[in-house]
Amino acid sequence: MLSWETDAAPNNGRVALVTGAARGIGLGISAWLIAEGWQVVLADIDRERGSKVARALGNNAWFVAMDVSQEELVSLGVAEVLGQFGRLDALVCNAAIADPHTPPVEELDLRRWKRMLDVNLTGPMLLAKYCAPYLRGHRGAIVNIASTRASQSEADCEAYAASKGGLVALTHALAVSLGPEVRVNCVSPGWIDARDPSQQRLAPLSVFDHAQHPVGRVGTVEDVAALVAWLLSDSAGFVTGQQYVIDGGMSRKMIYQD
Ligand SMILES: NC(=O)c1ccc[n+]([C@@H]2O[C@H](COP(=O)([O-])OP(=O)(O)OC[C@H]3O[C@@H](n4cnc5c(N)ncnc54)[C@H](O)[C@@H]3O)[C@@H](O)[C@H]2O)c1
Image (tube, rainbow, N blue to C red; front, side, top):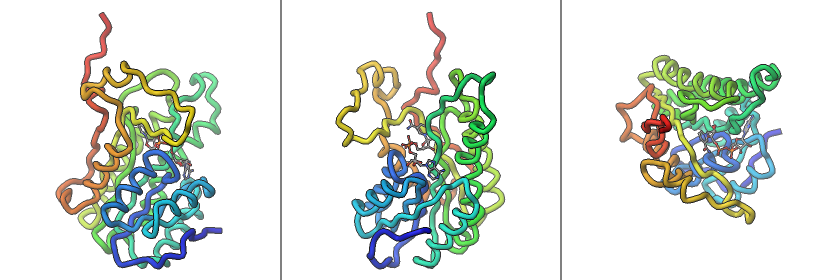
């Protein structure tokens, strides 16, 4: 059963649906958009945490529980958003199984592979499927959150890399299918410190963690949120089908070791 977690009446501002918004980058994007005046519906599989953070974000935040890999739940969730607001202006597909590591491919369980693809790739397709009619009506925009791992790898990340590579391709396919009414872009973050700062036992990042980046630091959720907000804005009106890498320059470095 889908539920609304605040009693606040929706106002007439633009409405964004952000998936995977109970924590990390999705929460940061939601907070940023609210600060810019958006009404934001946070969607997540984690109902308890999602409800809590939506309440903490104030009167322009709502929560809807949703497993993005389940077509019926996506359909119901989107219908709920439209029932409440009567409009949808932006979709941010951020929900994912974000840990890229899986067992070596020789031992990779097919169910694990399929679950990663279902959440990270099929989820954004389902969201686009059910949101597109409403986004078309308001000349809206979609931003998918991919990863630099769409084009770079370390060992034992096959499912994650494939899911994010697929998401980059899904992005340009959707941009062509949904244009000119809907723009569709993706953001590919590198290392973003998306850990919850309220967690007391977080190990601090090292000097080397930061210094290895050409910009001199690891990324923050705000770095990603600012780019997503721009891509959703009218200022990005001539931009669609693109992948924006946001990694402090890491993927531009030569990595051969002496
Ligand atoms: N943090 C990074 O360094 C980094 C780098 C590159 C890409 N990314 C991408 O950014 C996005 C967010 O990453 P993060 O680090 O904040 O991850 P996170 O694990 O902190 O947050 C992911 C959120 O998605 C939710 N979620 C997971 N499965 C879901 C499902 N089936 N349906 C609905 N919600 C679901 C989780 O409950 C969680 O709230 C992901 O797409 C991830 O792949 C992150």
